[in-house]
Image 1: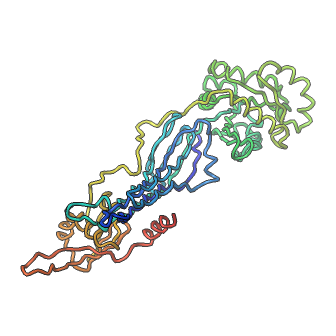
Image 2 (image 1 turned 60 degrees about the vertical axis):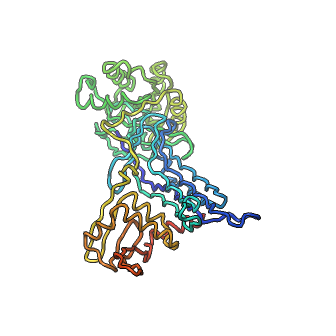
Image 3 (image 1 turned 180 degrees about the vertical axis):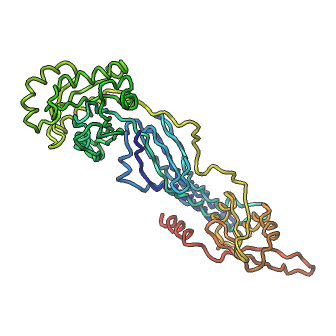
Length: 463
């Protein structure tokens, strides 16, 4: 089965930032904080559309981004949530993390869908930080940045149409004339040793598409397993309809095209009645040869009634091919599509699937340390270090989680650098001025954000 592939970039939306705002109205001189929260960023959702048959649309669009959440505003007004980006894929599509080569989702049945990337949460406005000890908080959170990934889509194609016929009937040439497939073609038996699939587009990228398979040439005795008969017939069995291709010229051996047709039909009948009963068109090929035209008056009447329709084509010149493909497309619209089987043991999950509370601290070098963990990384990215109260709050988060103590155990010294997500912080120690001795208070201050962090913020500010 062919693996049709595409590589795309997906991005979930940034959360909107919360705001610092105070109620200012006539006759309300001491209005309290009323800054609203930012909206949540949009998710990236993949879903199955059974009207799609291939990954062709992803040749024309590579980047998919959900909408950012909007910032909050005064009067405790919540910012609007960003809209999700919904990506339609055909049945049988698997989604892989392109860098880690890890399977993320296996989408088979119509209606299947998975949230692959969640949008960033919105930041809290200062109304959320009011307490009995702080009646006028000047603190608000930034929105959480969304996530960006390159993912690889793979489609387990089941051919809609199977080309059957004797070797050298011209099936490979017909497939090449119908699609961008480039099978090896030569004038000897069993030129094609593996099924070759081509994607057929009717009416351009927005039109109907279907998959056509060039099944290796059958020979007498294939139904009993002669040659590679069983292997070939299994591929034919999963198609929705057949095109029986006949060498109308009789070939170099001067064969009878009608007898060739009957031979293949017997093999199909003996292998499976269901296979023999599939909708079928007969294609008299090689109409560019004078031998074919001279035999046509004999061949065509003998084949009348043995298939739904008979077409005359030339795979070499392309004559009659477009008419054949349009007829096939119309007939396929009347035949239900078979769905591929899901891979055994595949789990479907989000790239965000992890323990949020877990964290790790490590020493990278003599003066560089790193802290990783979903919750602490989210906290640092959502902290506006330009606000003193926000910086103090982040310090309390570090101490409450035990991260400060762990860094102390690792031997961190004043002036050392701590990396958390895309933010670089400097470890400092401030002595609290007091009449009585106080323990030293550890403190992290921001030195700079990395370019990646700056780009993420610039995208949000532009909105």
